Amino acid sequence: MKQIYPDFYPQFHCLAGDCPDTCCKDWEVVVDEDAMAFYRTVTGELGQRLKDAFSVQDGETCFRLGDDGKCVLLTEDGLCPLQAQFGEKGLCRICASHPRFLEEYGAVQEITLSVSCPEAARLLLEHPEPVSFLTQETHEAVTTPNALDPTLYFAVRAFRDAAITLAQDRRRSVRDRLALVLLMAARAQTLLSAGKPEAVAPLCTRFLTHGTQERQLLRLRRMRRENAVFFPLWLLLRNMEHLTVRFPALLDDCAHAVRPDAAFWEGYASRLENLSVYFLFRYVLKAAVDGRLLEKTAACVFHILAVTRLFPHWDDRSPEGFRALCSLYSKEVEHSEENLALLYRALRRGALRVGQLLSLL
Image 1 (cartoon, one colour):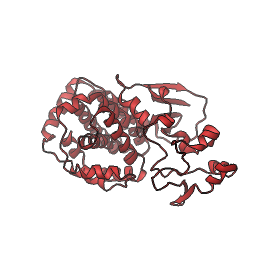
Image 2 (cartoon, one colour; image 1 turned 120 degrees about the vertical axis):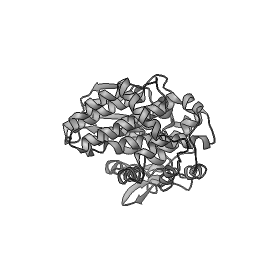
Image 3 (cartoon, one colour; image 1 turned 90 degrees about the vertical axis):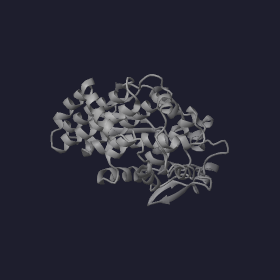
Image 4 (spheres, helix red, strand yellow; image 1 turned 45 degrees about the vertical axis):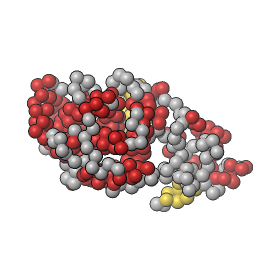
């Protein structure tokens, strides 16, 4: 199997007790059957604690959360006794893999570190140079059947490569880069919907030329409005399920958020670039399964727009505060399949339109 991962991935290690947050809070962590079978064999004091450590949520066994939202197993120093006593062997599948996201496309496995993890967010957002992706061959067997349409897969892969190239073009503002990505996605989706996936790669090649970009940006200037309102995006975020009290309270403060000033876009350009690449890498290739390329790409732009509008209302408007906001946003939106599904439905059904996103850039 071939593995692809961001260049900072090998540097990652869990901060454990030194982490400013804990991944053992607010989540409904589903316990897989193999882990549960192991937990039934644990004896002693920890075995007794395990007997009262689970609850059933929507028919699935999860670790129970206390009144503070933390896993009831955590010790006073915030560490997991299962990991302390047994190492990785003692963790259920979700806990052992977090904050890694793994996606398999045939014989290719892609790995991403979720920015919900403070250390992963630091490695991503403070990465000074454009993020690159490394490839290695492994001896792991393919665990999912290769049911992909190869023509669609390579079309979407070509699009994602071009989208990341556009997002990392530091000759242009981040706003213009994201607009070009979105405009390219709209054109590519038209080709896919017409049954012409083979035409996507040539389209992307044209979008990487200066002349095509200038023509597209001229079109954008007619669509971009300084008075464009954030409210439709805010309403969608407000209708999502929330894991914390902090996030809806933040939303209440920014229902009428305005476009950040130029100093913000310039000062946080590399962080916003890296965050854009993170979303594009993680989500766009999923369109190789369902063909919904524009929907996946528009959702990536939605995430960036949301973070840029929330940040001026955040209690810590420093680079460290920006990382904390990105982590909270990821926990609230990315880690909920229901929330992502709501966003995709809104884009698919026209409740949230690409033109609205372009007007906010």
